[in-house]
Length: 387
Image (cartoon, rainbow, N blue to C red; front, top):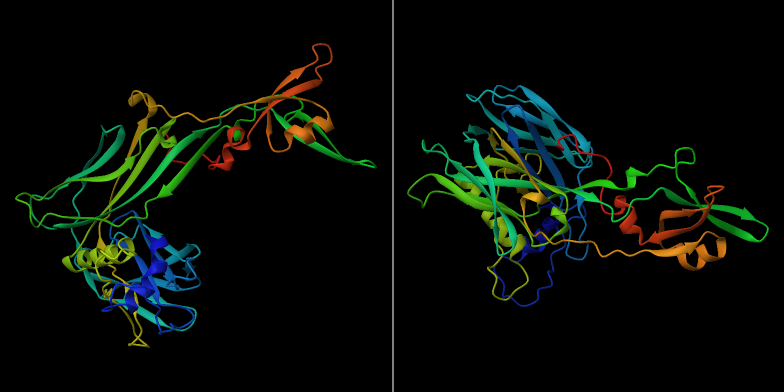
């Protein structure tokens, strides 16, 4: 959702105009308006609050608000600090809050401004019954399933993050070596591990994680039963995400009607702009306020619930006829500086042909870098949750 925040400023300014191209005469203050994203987790899991500033359409970058002091504050004036784990991201794991109290977020930014949300009660959040999947038109479609027959809550939000394993198209035990001489740089291909001549698996096994940027909500107020079964994510047919193994992590939040409606307006403003048939942008009045500058606009709506989580894994072998393949090819290159400079520097070496007597590399095969080094498409640090 953060990538869409850059569009919010113009949406806030165009409230009643026509749908032709609009050049706003209003100039926002240089730091933009504060945007507060996240929820307070009353349970043992992670509470994460992200602070950013709005920017204009001409400057579509994420402006993280760093150096702020962020607290979860209770009505009895006790407070627990959230730590800045990365720029603009403030978190704490294990708040374990008292459900009989009300809570709010309290923010002090480095420029001296103070922001608070309204005090809110802890909203009951039922467990996720399951996250299921099935083939639909070749795609893998995933669904979230939950229910609350006691009708404690009827409004929900979900956040997801996809992680998938990546394998390089080719194994490699080689690397290029360059030395300087009077005639210039001389190139050769050598073993990455000169002693064991082993495969460099650090370039073969990788993982990539992508959080969803969509606003996903659901409500049961119009249903006969308080039961949710909604599409939550999709792997397009023959996508590289399911080349080896795929995982979907889902977080479920329960909402008040007020926050649900706020998110619906946010979704319209950020995902439905640009077409003459789109709905008019609407004002994003949340439950946050600037206490020392009361007229300042603050974007966000922070509530408290026990966040529910579920992770599933899907192996490629579970999905028959998944036909992803990586279009890679190798060429053979003589192991001398001229051949390497002509043919090899835009490729990476994969497999050697050696002299059977001396073991010296006579020639080698090489392929495009993205086919040999998976780090160009992900990270070779295995996630701690990976099975």
